Length: 437
Image 1 (cartoon, one colour):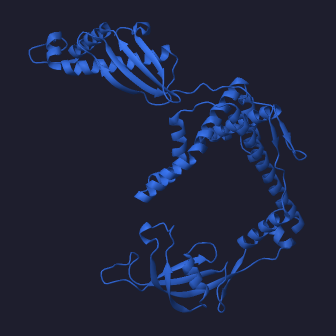
Image 2 (cartoon, rainbow, N blue to C red; image 1 turned 135 degrees about the vertical axis):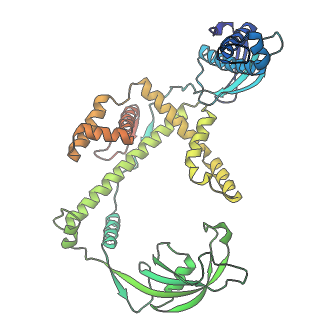
Image 3 (cartoon, rainbow, N blue to C red; image 1 turned 45 degrees about the vertical axis):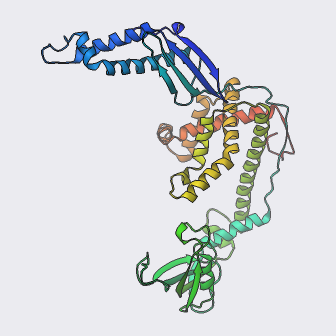
């Protein structure tokens, strides 16, 4: 196979919309002829035809029998090689599949074709500092601690069966549901008879009409109700419909919450008293609030940097990011679902475009200023994890690598270095004591 000299190709490069590039390439006819001869020899060396020894079939016989196949393969191979040579010569790195069109090879003339693809953009690095970002502050209200304590109470509640009184939100109930309006030509998808269900009132585990009906019953009580299906019900065929049900409240269980005292605190860990538990919860909430506030500062700062450095981003990268955001509903059936997915794609497109631009700009800044996490920094983090887990470092590192967590550690360290650098270039106002500024 002859070497394809890119300097002998006729190449025209045109910029399309955004990051799209279009190539027009012409390949001299002698390359086509060389490729035909090479393929003919290869066919001849492998073919076994009656009357000829294997590998001794004359070229003209091969051309007569396999001419169209040889021609097609020669064109395909030359187009691929010529396209690669043209992109290499013009330093074009596609981020999408190359779309080849308009392949022509007139008798005696050159092979020509067009190719279209998107390239990774040249990311500008203009202004990355001199911004002023206000810190949102860190505040944990007392009621936040109270809500955590209430949740812990609920998780450690003892359930007592109640024999009187109507159910209230937070009670656990067992009910029997029987459909009453099945026509002669209908079948109940759940089969005949009643079905039992357990759920906790007030947590959205049952239809609103069913919860309202249950709250009107006493334990052991039965009544008939019309139950409507809301417009967002998962089964589209039932949306806006109603059913006549017989509902029986089989049992009601009420939670008995433990006292918020020192004994309760000690059941949750190494806490001397309830005040120590409250302090630990407060510290954890403050740590979370501080982390959230610092992330908000980083996001505000990066938003300003992205706005100050505009550039086109490849449509394919935006589409891929959008696909990842709507992947949970893309495969579902139904015209309404498809329309909703398409509408969602349009709504989140600006978010996707900004995210891609942010990612590319962050990578450019990281490369430009040498902010990648070093092997030593990653090893130090793994060492700290191994000590906290009481396991050998090699074993922990192998597990992290296998799960992909090692890459996440490296990415997290790199991101921390990036934002530490960017914060030094700007002013962060109102940062609380101990915060970054």
